[in-house]
Amino acid sequence: MYEDYYRFSAKPFQLNPDPRFFFGSKGHKRAMAYLDYGLSLGEGFIVITGEVGAGKTTLVRNLFRQIDAHSLVAAQLVSTQLDAEDTLRSVAASFGLEHEGLAKSSLLKNLESFLAAAARQGRRALLVVDEAQNLTPRAVEELRMLSNFQNEERSLIQTFLLGQPEFRGILQSPDMQQLRQRVVASYHLGPLDPDETRGYIEHRLRTVGWQGNPSFDDAAFAALHRFTGGIPRRINTTSDRLLLLGYLEEKNHFGEAEVNEVIADLKNEVAHQEFRGPTGINHTATSGNALHSEDTAHLAQRIEQVERSVNRILPIVRKILYTVSERHADSVQGGDVPHDAEP
Image (cartoon, rainbow, N blue to C red; front, side, top):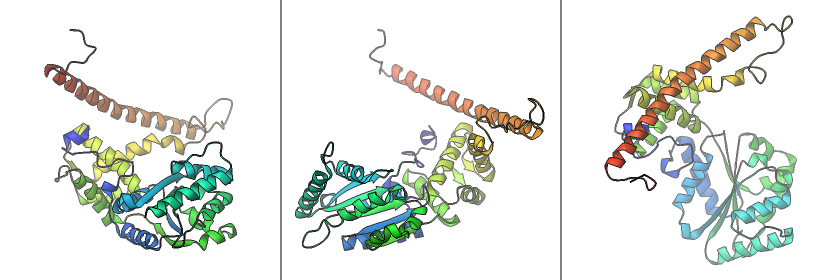
């Protein structure tokens, strides 16, 4: 869609973590330094915390990209409320090991054998545990016990724990004392400041071939930072919608007005969260079935917001359908006839 309109080689604000788009803000560079230091020790736990969408996963993937793949065997586990044995089973599965129907002793034996074999081959074993704030104390204990697997030189496995800000508080609980003693490096990844927000947006645009079209004025960048709070994932979502607006309305420059227009649309799409009750209405009536005047006003506002969102979406759908039909017509004229087409 807008990639072709602005002549981008790819989508600049995709939500999936991609190390190609890694942006070295002050916080991200410092976090990378902590990760490098932790890796140089070759043991223990490395803890990275940050808000949802702060870039923790992208940070780790960028680190992996810098490590020789032949010297690294890595697995990722997105933690949920697993019990101790299920945690071990999930770790084994993450490393591609047999895990179904095995007793805990067999799981541990398979894991130790696998890690020892990797060490003999000169390969570093890393386990990345995402959403670490969801770990139960028993699950944490199982992960800690894995760090006891050692050869004569060092621990056979190193673990990264990625979590939301509340994980810092969890680490201070008495149940986590033994884990804290194994933490070799930790860092909290904060939001981008206004200048970094601008640099982040421009960096992602340049990565896909941006050469100044579309352009942004200073007020647009300031508005983007105010709304997103400097959280990369929020910046991606808002900037993506801004470019979609530009494609739809054929804009080659964005100012504060365009950014505010997109922000209003995004707020409308989640406006139901601001209302009480499943229908957005406070059902406490003043008399009989009559609605309170405040609820009537909320309902009218909600209907207006929905209508405005629909009115904005319809032109986008029409334009997409038109583009698809044009491409199909061009392919047919060029001899690329679908297999199921009639002769």
